[in-house]
Each structure stands twice: as C-alpha cells, then as structure tokens.
Amino acid sequence: MNYITEKKISLLTQSNIIADRLSYYIREINSKYVNEIIREIVKSSSMDIKSRVMVSDLDGNILVDSYNTLEGDTLNEEELSLALLGENVARHHYLEEYGKVMYVAVPIVNKGKILGAVFISSSLEDIFLNIKTTMRKFMILSFFGLMITAFISFIFADIISKPIEKLTEAVKQMARGKFNQKVEVYGSDEISNLGRAFNLMTTKLEQVDKQRREFVGNVSHELRTPLSSIKILSETLIHQESTPEKIYKEFLKDIDSEVDRLNKIIDNLLYLVDLEKENIHLDYQITYVNYLIQKIISNLKPLADKKNITLNFDEKVKIQVMLDKFKVQQSLINIIGNAIKYTPENGRVDVELYTQQDSFVIKVKDNGIGIPEDELPFIFDRFYRVDKARARKTGGTGLGLSITQQLIALHQGEVKVESTVNKGSTFYIILPLRSAV
Image 1 (cartoon, rainbow, N blue to C red):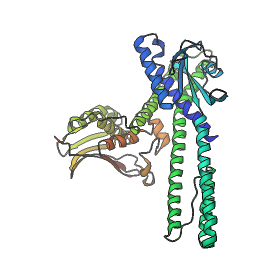
Image 2: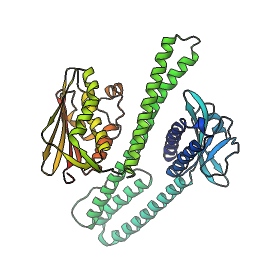
Image 3: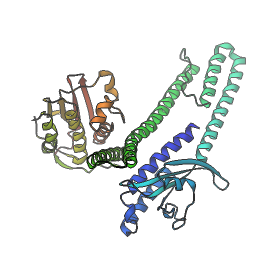
Image 4: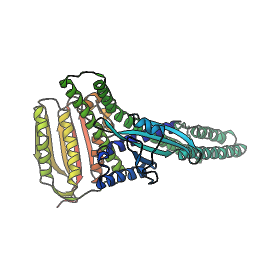
C-alpha cells in the first residue's frame, strides 16, 4: 500500500501545481490565445505524469481533456463534485474495462474563489504489475539461489553452503521489500565478491529508496505548510461576523505572503525538475563579470543597508568570458543574498574576484551566524535548512543553494564552502577561464 499512498501524494501534488498554473488563465478560457495556453499546460502535464488530465467549470462541464474525447460533456464523478466544493480528493477504483485506477480532483482557486477543478485519472495497473514482476523476479532468483545452495552443499559442504544460505535469505528479505540487507564477507573468492556486490547493491537501493521517500515527504510538507496557513487565515476571516478593516487587511497581507511563498516553492521545484531532466540550456554570451557583480551588489545594497551591513567588492582582475549571465546572476544573487540574510546588523559581506590557474573565482565572505561543520555536506541538498525557524522567517525555501550548485555545474564549475559557527561563512564559485575573450 505504500506505493499507492506515494502515488496518491504525487498525483495530489501534481494536480495542485497544475491548478495553480491554470488559476491565472481559467477566467479567460474563451480567448483563443488563453485556450491554447491552457491546452498546452494540460497536454504537457498529462505527458509528464502519464495520466489523463481534465479541466472542468463550476457545473462539472469538461472544458479541456488531454484525450480530447470528453470536452463539452458533464462529468458526474463524486471526486469532481467534492473538488468543486473546495476539497482535495484522491480515491482508487476498480473498473471492469480499465482495471485499477485512481481519480484525483482539486479545485482551481483564484483570489479565494473556486473557478473550476482539475480532474486526473491515472491507471494503477503498472504499480501492481511492477510489484508482481518484482516479486516474480525475486522469487525466481531465490529459487535459483536455493538450487545453487543445494548443489554446492553436496560438493563443498558447510564451508560454501552457509554463505550461500545467508545470501539467499537476504535475497528473500529483499523480495519482501526489506532493502537494508547485508551479508558478512570473508576472503577474496567468488562467493566473497558476490557478497560484496550484493552489499553494494542493497546500499544503493536503500539510498535511492530513502531519497525518494524524503523527496516526496519534503515536497508534501513544504506545500502543505503555506496551504495550511492560508486555510487557517481564510477560515478565520470567514467565521468572524464583523472584522475590523485593519485586521482584515493584515490577514490578507499574510495570505498574500503565503501565496508568494507557495509560488516560489513551486517555481523552484519546476526549475529543479527541468535541471534534472536537462531541459535547461545555456545561452552563452560575452559577459563582463566585473560589471555583472557590480550590478548584483547594487541591487542587493538596499537589503544590506536595512541592517547596516557593509557590502564591499574587491576586483583583483578584469574578467570577460562566454557564459549564461542570467543563470550565473541567479546563482550569485542566491549566495550574496544568503550572506546578507544570515549576517547580523552592523556586519560585513565581502565579494572578491580573482583568478586561480585556469579558472576565475568569485569569493563571498561574511561574518554571520556560520554553519556547523557536521551540516556542511548537506547544505546543497533540496529543502535542507541549517536553521529551519530562521529560514522560514527570512522566506527561504531550502532550494536556492541546490539550484545554484546545479547551475554552476552546467557551466563546468563548482561551488565550495568554508564556515565556522558564529564567525561566518565563505562561498567560492569557481568557473573555467577557457572561454575567456
């Protein structure tokens, strides 16, 4: 059932993302241009999640269908009716014609008003088929393992049969979904090499499974937090018979802030997905790095001035290279912006540009709160925050450094960091000089 639950969470997350993207256009769906945009969003989303995606109006009439067969018809599914009442619904059914399917429906909301709903129909047959196939493979492997164990037991007795029996038992445990299996390895013969390969395989499977679960959990948590805040704030306003205008405006400002944060998380997630799919292409152009840094510092100076932070730029060299200046600019804004955010009042942030062998280095040093040594290896992980309370207060999503690292890696560069708690952090963005002009 874990796979069904994960499928449910994934489809709910995807449907909310689609609904959020459509909320800006749904009012103008009768416009030919807007209709084409909505169809493109629905078609591309349907291909990405390999499911049928439909958009309905408030009466349940299908406006857009990724399969182009139900447009203009009225859909009477209970999930859709609940979504039009403001609920997020995900249920699975058994249909004689299609087998096991999951229906997911979420409302399309703009400025607190429900304008329609997104309805997704996704087959679950592949999940059950994969489980059956995996179990069959594991059982076949277990069977052959048992046969080999029996054969070798007659020839080499306990010396070889015991390791094989342990390995077979571990394979059986993996067939039950327990990936944290390890076998003891002694010597350097073929059986020992097989045991090492098995241990390496289980370690990697465990890591992949853990990363997948953590990512799904993190995405769900990050999206749920602002949504819960918006729901609480809006329900408070709804249930109060008379609300002073001042309080009303304060609540609306809080809701607007949470929506901005939600949009920022979704935009960053979509950007990360594009990065991992290698859908992001670099637009190389001649860039004067000194001017690029000066422009970023000028834009961020008001943020530093609010905290009376000295923002200094030391130009050791003049650098002009071929790179995607907008993506490098985005990376620098993340790094320098974080330095300002996590440096206390009356602090200092120094940016330095210099060369190092065949590369040029942009060094960003602050005297802020610093990062604990044991957390440094994880700061580029998605959703990782050193101080969650402070990160939320400053509006961080835990995705900026991950995006920065991948953008710099696209330029064949790297990002390094040194830090001491309560003394500050130093980030090094290292990029190749081979494209210098």
